[in-house]
Length: 221
Image (cartoon, rainbow, N blue to C red):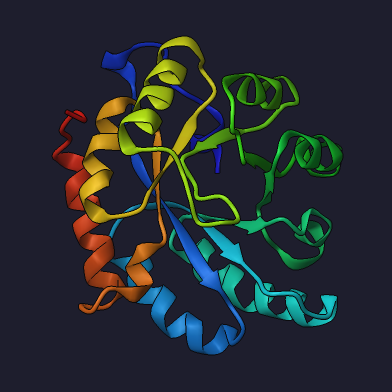
């Protein structure tokens, strides 16, 4: 996914922000594929972060191999949450690592041919270290292990700072559809959403709304 590894130099040249779709932990890949395909067809999706529960590696590779062609046909990249060691074996496009230490331990196995994403950036210093470690993007705003995260305004401030200072793309995590436009307005290159799977209208409808909100950005007040 070349778009995640490059960024325009000025606001006027900056590509429109895109969606980064995060899955729930996938146990039944065949059943999840029936939700994933229409969700991918509902909007332009840059990448899919695939979350997998603990399982035998052969079982995990089988799930990835089933979903990877679906994601590829939609023109998106398939990024595994962790499991950098399974990327080359399964047809995934890269891995998302939480924390600078995990990124540094995996980046040599992934680069230059695969995506190495970085999350768990609790400080600006961590984010800069991840960039120096050759991350392809930095994720801001995802909940911690206790389900807590900074306020929307704090995340928007962090995204705005990054967009102004660095060329490396950043992803901003939205906990609700109402946050999508605000994070895009702050300067996020990609807005990550995982709430769509629980939307009463179905994932495809929620993805379509998220894409519409990307086009109608409003700064955090």
